[in-house]
Amino acid sequence: MSLPHAILTALLEKPSSGLELTRRFDRSIGYFWSATHQQIYRELGKLEAEGLIRVLPSEQPARGQKKAYEVLPAGRAELARWTAASHDPRPLRDAMLLRLRAAAVVGTDGIEPDLRRHLELHERQLAEYREIERRDFPPGRDSTEDRLRHLVLRAGIDLETFWTEWLRHALAEFTELPGQPGSAGPG
Amino acid sequence: MSLPHAILTALLEKPSSGLELTRRFDRSIGYFWSATHQQIYRELGKLEAEGLIRVLPSEQPARGQKKAYEVLPAGRAELARWTAASHDPRPLRDAMLLRLRAAAVVGTDGIEPDLRRHLELHERQLAEYREIERRDFPPGRDSTEDRLRHLVLRAGIDLETFWTEWLRHALAEFTELPGQPGSAGPG
DNA sequence: CCGCCTTTTGCAACTAGTTGCAAAAGACGG
DNA sequence: CCGTCTTTTGCAACTAGTTGCAAAAGGCGG
Image (cartoon, rainbow over all chains, first blue to last red; front, side, top):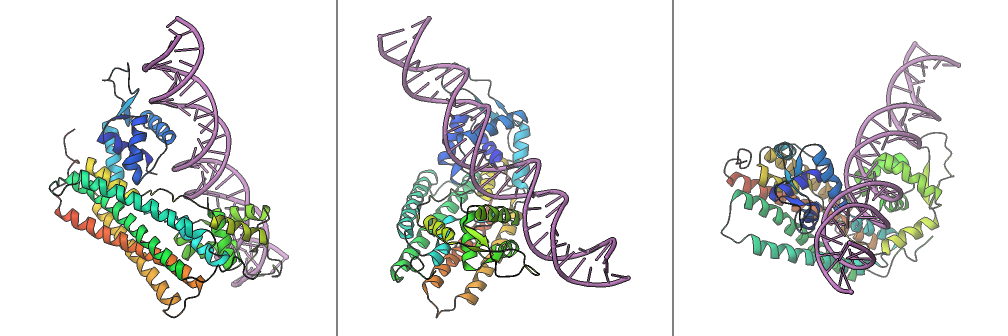
């Protein structure tokens, strides 16, 4: 269970309100640990109750964002503990692969357009990652922090590259397939 | 939500009892849609209640497996419907990437051994996939069913290849890093 | 046949994540 | 200052997945 740790990381990078966190999750940490605003608000409440974060007192709440949170020492310690601990990778769960397996039994009707759609989605994501790389990681900089964040981005880029290549391969395979088996098969 | 469809697919490939399904999930469909035996039993109950599957009457329940299920026409139709329908890919959720991001803030202590461990796990999985490919997909065969299943296996192989390469890259990067930042940093 | 062991099946409670909706509070026109 | 609109925060109910445990049933030695 990692949502609280995702939030702690985001808050250490920059103290934020629930809404700001939600927005940042949509374009940064959320790329590899997504969360809805309701998850975030609930978790912020829990983290505050546990004494890992607190409401930033400095800003007067007169206007703009309401409650900005910052991480307390106990929160930083918990994040460090979690980061250092060993965790098993969670097993893959991918519906498209399952659908292809099902298609081997009930026929491939309707899948091809969705393969194309997924290809477009992954191409778009890949382009977005590349743009971030171009913008945030120019050749010169290599502080430890930059290197680590770049490494994570690299994983995203390579993963999307894998998907686009595999989907293209799948679509090529489809053009070689005979008619739709199973869909009008026996039984 | 895809577990019922994973089960329908597995049952169409071969009618089975709950325990047999559990075992097959551990080494085949479970590679890309994992499930525990409790999930499977619960889902079998639901599917039977909905009239999508039924207990195989032929075998007398005297000994060996208890209740083997088979898919009814309504179940096959539901699976075909689901397979043809469009689904969004679910967002990535990977704790290791999150940990590296956290490490950029709280320090990299303790991560490197787990990177090595993950590398080993992914290497093992890759070897297993390659063995399955060698055994089940020799060059000659190319029925539509084989091609589709091979395509799915290819995704697994390429995905594990990506992870092993990325983890090796990450470990190489680590050897170039200076001491542990953040763990004794400011604040 | 009885008690114990293993296999198979399953319930119940819990944790995680999603969806729908709505209250609190500032923004703004009248 | 009042009503209405938007932004921000949040509750509650629901769906999905996990964990712990235990009952039913056959296997088997005595």
